[in-house]
Amino acid sequence: MKDMNLPNKLTLFRVFLIIPFIIVLLGGPEGWFGLTIEVADWIALAIFILASLTDLADGKIARKYNLVTTFGKFADPLADKLLVCAALIVLVEMERIPAWIVVVIISREFIISGFRLVAADSNVVIAASYWGKFKTTFQMIMVCLMIVNLGQKWEWMKVLTDITMWIALALTVISLMDYLWKNRSVLSDKK
Image 1 (cartoon, rainbow, N blue to C red):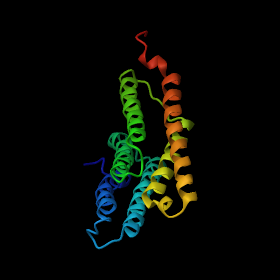
Image 2: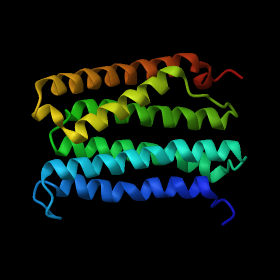
Image 3: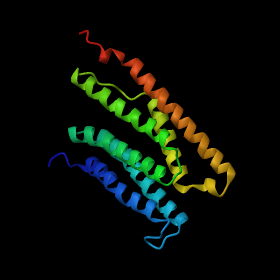
Image 4: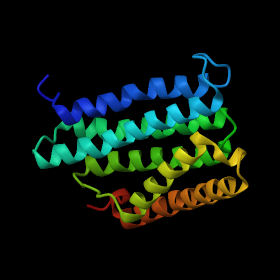
């Protein structure tokens, strides 16, 4: 397959890393691998960060060497959403984040994805906004803090994690509203 260049392989590697990430994070408490909860959390964090770094690398490489492909345009954002959604769902299972917050975050992703489909059908390209980039940054920080779960040891870490969660939630809603408002003409039937 000619689309399987290095950036696309990195994207597929990111999707593959979701499996060991989930297994290690959920397997820690009962010691599937003889790991303590703390060790499993740190290994899961390392896997999550590695997967996140492949996102930075694949985009830079694709743009720098003109390796942007149709497959990459489809798979890269999908891989990002799969990684973050998998992490959030596992964190709900582990009771580290309220389920309703995850529902809001995942709903935003579905709404934006649907909106992009409508825009693409009208040959409209919608660029990412700064609000969306801030949202992604805070969501990633929030997920990392919740994975290592240092709030159970230190109260100040729990406060930091909670503040980061509320900022990520606010940015999720703000970025959705900003995105819909700026691109409201896409939903218009007027041509």
